Image (cartoon, rainbow, N blue to C red; front, side, top):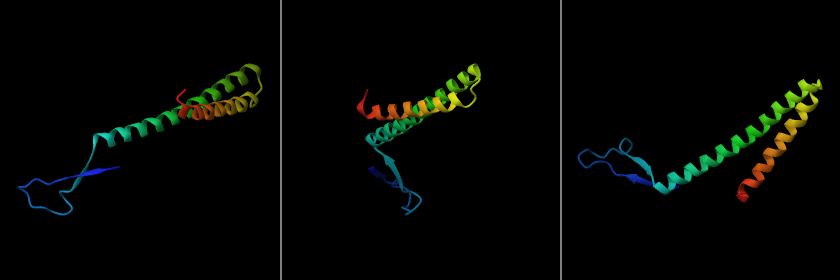
Length: 93
């Protein structure tokens, strides 16, 4: 990232540590926001897929009385779906 140094006001004496600050350019701010947006998208995609698998598995286990079978199966399906979605993400589909 490129930082632009902000100059201290002329009426105050120049102190080396207290008056120096850095300001991000508009392009750098956009780049940071894109990165944060991508990280949020990745996290939510993974969490939603796995949690959906968890709830579907618990529901089917309660309905069919097969305690850990469908829970484990659908958590694995949710994890696979999350990985597949992350694979598709850079392709723009």
